[in-house]
Length: 157
Image (cartoon, rainbow, N blue to C red; front, side, top):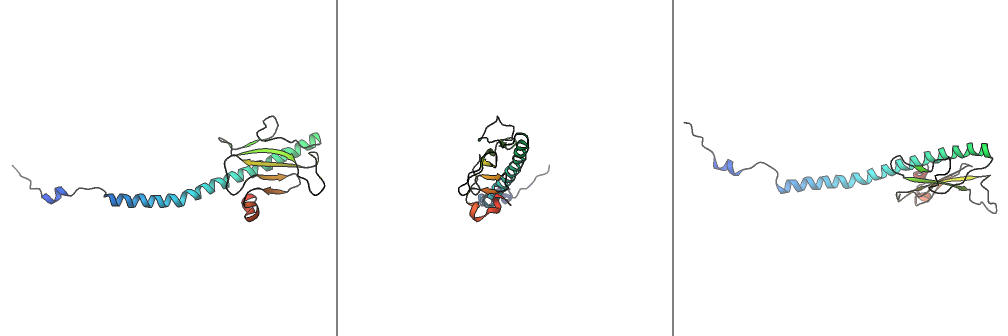
């Protein structure tokens, strides 16, 4: 018969993590998340803006085709699905809604829908810097929000 002698100090020592080690890991993960998440959100917003700009260009092309056929542009409101144009941006969820209206007045002259059209993309999900994006048939690009005056390249790079 063999007897095994066990050192009493080895029984008291257990393997695993201490609470301090676990809290350090949690703090590191929290700091990384606090840095990475806002960058991720801004990247998503940037992608949505690009998608809205592409939809504006596509809708403007459709408006030009409509103009050649009917000698007028077609105005429509947000969410109007009765028009032959794209009215929403986004595949699974709608991120922008589109509308078209006569161009704004310049001076004492107010253009009609037959002469000039302005297509506007309004965000469904709040964008803190860029509000509505717009494009006119004369090529004028504009936006609303705080980026209009300070960082216009966020609207139209």
